[in-house]
Image (cartoon, rainbow, N blue to C red):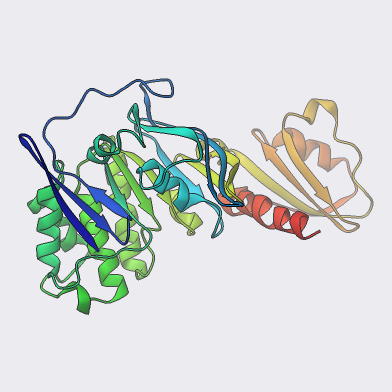
Length: 339
């Protein structure tokens, strides 16, 4: 835990770093005019070939990601995919090896103080002041962040059914997670970044947190959320980015995904080549000696009409879903690496 108070002429600045650089919140006067960095002013978050190396280990490999203002974007990937490294680069906690990143038009490394005023960040590992009571922690963060509010913080804690009388050192892991969420959700900043927000929470509280993040997005906030719970990403987000081995391997519009379907069935003989007129509708096809699976994008009827004339058995149709997309990029690439 580190608390540093710095004095500059006419301004008092307070930096609070949680967990060895997990969170920084600043109390400073007026917002400076943003610099035009990495293109359109409509981008709340932008990275351009962002790379981070630790010696020979490549933690982040040329990531380019643009998140427009007002979008809710989910970031998925296995442990070690580079998600948290990317967040720490965005907050200026790490210096990139190469590439650039900006938030609201401001360079994340050279103007990280200005960047911190524009966001609220919940780290994956919430570490707070152990000797302080929950209410004292809430009030502290409400006071040091320019978008903080004591009333809003306590209302948020009440929605999460959090006992603010207890000292942080005596809180369970789930209670500390609630306290971190109460801080992050009560900050009325333009950009909200959540790293595994529902870890250690029971199902009822998870549902409430998802609702609160969705409410923030509906008020026009830009939201970036990292979660291993795919249903949460589907419920909240408009877009899902899948990372693996430090790279973005897939970028999915979730509204478009809901138009995609999977057709599964049995075979008595191999499927013939897909007709040219269906090539834009059938995005993936796989078959074994006894079964097939087809992924479609758009109108199902042409694909079903084609299958009706083929020697297939019982057919099942379902929406594609984020799980199938994630598995395609995670498990199959794992098999390719092991091979």
